[in-house]
Length: 405
Ligand code: NAD
Image (cartoon, rainbow, N blue to C red; front, side, top):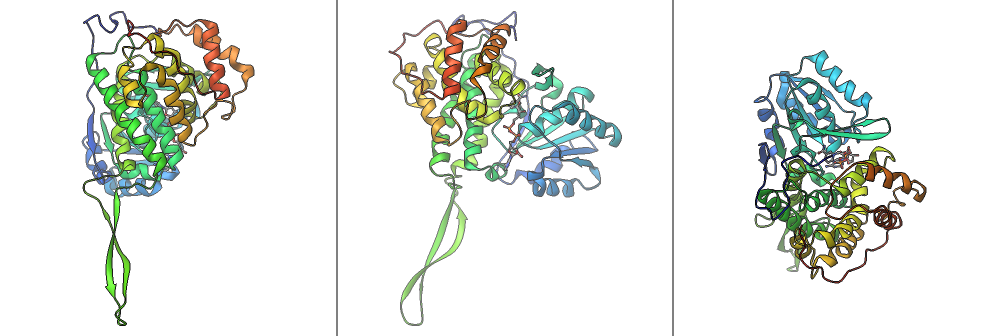
């Protein structure tokens, strides 16, 4: 996507900041507030939820009662045309005037297809860290590619984050989804249309995610509960210890419950800035080669961050601190170690990408006309992509001087 005409470079002192407001309801148990929030947006609500979200969708449908216009459960990554058209047809058939999506980025994507066509408002209830709920970005497959664009109508009006809903994600998928959010936050650090506010949000999100992700990996059962035990004295006078209760620790919500907080600002900055090399590559890999969404980010992010680090050392200094590197030279290796620790594949070949298609991927990314901190020399882009295909740990480079970015 070409850079907007009024964009500036970091350090110019001028910026344009555009971040439309979204009403956010956050907290454990807020699923019970979805119906009440939805009827603020419309009187007849269509509910989109994948089958894994059935129990939650049942509760929302019951609470909506006669205001539930219907339910659809087919969701798929990248919103294939048949999925999008089916959803729009259902809105027309039922006369729904608002839509609730309950699920990951695929469910939000289906709701966005409806909003783009009909203009009806979306309430999103995310269950992954993909971040689509905070962006005005739509996507759809088009002639073997993923076409994307921006349209204010697809930005959800209300987002309900109930951390309890993310607990069903397997730890590996939760961590890879967190890497997806981290990719948004890192790539938002240096685009031409970053503002001081988007940089603050990006730094907050990077810090929160890099703290949370290793804990999700190390202790996936950290749900912020503690076990209450009681000493019992039996009739024989002997003392035994029994587990009597499982209680929520009020001082520690548990890292799994904190994950949605990390994803929220990452989604906001994804929506407010222009994404560059990393997201363009990811779009090509999903759009043309059907690689899975979250896993692609996991394998790609260490390489794209390492690629840009020498050219964006100023903008990435806070990322270096967050990942624990002495300077930006350590970002690539540290992210690779984090990606490896998630247990998700760290090479694109493990996700099914053949080295034979690299020429096409490089050509597509160069043709896209993106503006990246580091000039997109074909050989350098190909080398970075090869490292992602093979899953090489990026090398440290000697501490870079703060650059223009
Ligand atoms: P997803 O929504 O496809 O979910 C991945 C899998 O996890 C699915 O099988 C789903 O059923 C399951 N799942 C989701 N939440 C669960 C939970 N809490 N417990 C158990 N299982 C659960 O994947 P995603 O990574 O969230 O989203 C990917 C899609 O989102 C892609 O199409 C991508 O292009 C899109 N996306 C769009 C934007 C945007 O701004 N437009 C941003 C990010 C992602």
